[in-house]
Image (tube, rainbow over all chains, first blue to last red; front, side, top):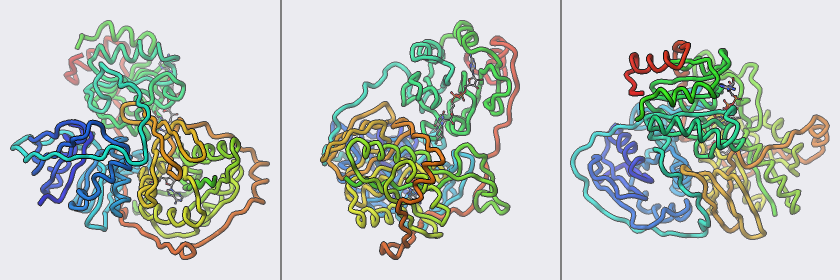
Length: 298
Length: 249
Ligand SMILES: Cc1cc2nc3c(=O)[nH]c(=O)nc-3n(C[C@H](O)[C@H](O)[C@H](O)COP(=O)(O)OP(=O)(O)OC[C@H]3O[C@@H](n4cnc5c(N)ncnc54)[C@H](O)[C@@H]3O)c2cc1C
Ligand SMILES: Nc1ncnc2c1ncn2[C@@H]1O[C@H](COP(=O)(O)O)[C@@H](O)[C@H]1O
């Protein structure tokens, strides 16, 4: 009997949760809610949800509570989905939760960030049954082997909460948290059209995703889901290009684990340069078109 | 309608965080403390609802004597009453949610608006846990809230954009940064708020206990990324990326 149940929204979350569960070293089952559960990630059982749509958190927790009771550890992703659902499940099961796990120290001890990533805390959970959420950037490459038993599960679609609208999913670019290249822009991008043309344009040129600061999102220059940082998305691509971004702690919290960081800023003393591998003191309105021009097409 | 807004006292988000001598906690010498920014947005939202439709806004904070400062500020923003559950015990988010459940029941609150995350522990849990404990619907990471007497319609931020949920009241709403821009409160407002009621109670008055099943063993500060170097032109940048980092750019 598996002791860990990993609950993923999609295949991308399944991958990082499997990487976590493999490191954790106990038998695990994998439940994937919106896509067919992968069977080559080392799970004992790969469970796929039958429902057509993933319901709001209250109905989802009701649907899965009994299943979860059968496992000591419930692992979710530290995504908006995982945070919304996982913490409610922890409350429903009356179990403590260790969020944003970056590292496994032992079966009950983990490293997680606090204070916008300025502190790494080693925390111990003193209950044998608990819920975790896992940072995808810290657990990314599971071993692929074997083939899990397959199961499917019916999920109740609605309880009291009704979903009455969903914003259209922007197509085309890779998902911000999965992309190998992220090009992010800040406040000086002026307006949505300029942001899309320069930041979106360079991202497309490099086969990457576009990201933004809170200042850019707040002033309507970029869409909400592009926000990178303490309270937005956590990314760790191969290459992160920050254009017109000052480098606040809150922004850095979301991108400092990127492999290579490039900063383009007119202010030579901008804090972003302290963490950048390459700093270009230049007007982004000149630098980005030139980069688009000279970069190889991906 | 009675709206309960739980607030936490946290370090100023713009302050530099350092550890104490034995790395068991952060060094609080000279540190300024504020209302958790997400909770301030929650207070603002509750007060706007009150200004539109005449609700009662009660704020609550669980923590040491100093929390009174943040509760006073909440009263100055426009809350009607404050409850201070005074304790020096440690809690995890589930422990906080359990105490908050008792407060919700004691106050017969109809709606709870609270922060999505406390910017000290960055847990992002207490609201969802409270919703589960009360068996109320939840709308987390709200960027827009519309209420009638019996339903809440909330636009919330998701991984891929936004969705709008409709749910019966009572429910729990947790705030995202874009919900509103909290008003500025000048000193006279803070002084005037001194006459508003601030009840001090203890955990035992709520029949609650301190619970903490996630304990911090030690803290460290991440090794800072060493800064690289400045490049003089786009050409030099591309060359460095290609030759030094092997980037296919
Ligand atoms: C609780 C809380 C949570 C937060 N969470 C987040 C978060 O998750 N993510 C986040 O990003 N922020 C977050 N913030 C906000 C954060 O503190 C900063 O305000 C924000 O990151 C600043 O964005 P910016 O760098 O775009 O703007 P600014 O700080 O205004 O910087 C703009 C930069 O652009 C440069 N510049 C100007 N013109 C040009 C040009 N033509 N070419 C090149 N460079 C130029 C300037 O020199 C400057 O350095 C949070 C704040 C709080 C209080
Ligand atoms: N000690 C506390 N007193 C009152 N409310 C709290 C306390 N701790 C957390 N909260 C509330 O719970 C929210 C989420 O906290 P957390 O789960 O710690 O990220 C905060 O934004 C507050 O609204």
